[in-house]
Length: 211
Image (cartoon, rainbow, N blue to C red):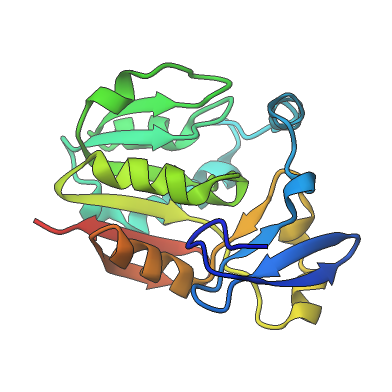
C-alpha cells in the first residue's frame, strides 16, 4: 500500500486480523483500505461515545491538553474545533477561556461556513486517527490558518516495534484507521509550510503557520 499521508511506498504487516502499512519515509501507519468503516458505521460508533462536560475526569483530561497548548489558544483567538463529536467539550472549555470557538463535525455539526474563514487556531483533538484521507484534510486545514495560526493536534503516537503495535489497545477501536508517529506530524508540517512548535509524547503537537 502507498502511505495515505505522504504517498510513499509503505511496507505491509499483519497486526491482529488486520493488515497495516508502515511508511518508511514519514512513519505513518495506516490500516488496509477495506477496513476503513463506512460513514454510517462511523456515526453509529460515535453515537456510543459518552464523553460529557459533566464528567470531571474527562474534562480534566481535556483541560490538561489545553493547558499544554495555551499559548497558541489565547483569549480572543478564533478557534475551529474540527471533528467536535456529539458533545464538543473542548469547545466548551475554550469558550470558558475566552476564545471565539466554532465547531465542525460531519455528523453532529455539519456545514461549510468554516471553510470560508481564517482561524487563529484549529483544534484537531482525538480526530487525526479517524481520518481516511489525512493528507487531504490536513492540507485543507493548514490553508485556513491565519499567518502565525496554530494547528493543535492531539493523537496518540504508536509504540515502537510491530509486536508492541499489535498489542496496542488504541489501534483496536474500529474507527481508528491511521496513526501518526511524532515524525509523521513534523514532516507533514514541513510539507505544508508549518513549523513544529510543540511535539511531545504521548500525544501532543502544535504546528504553526509561518508568517
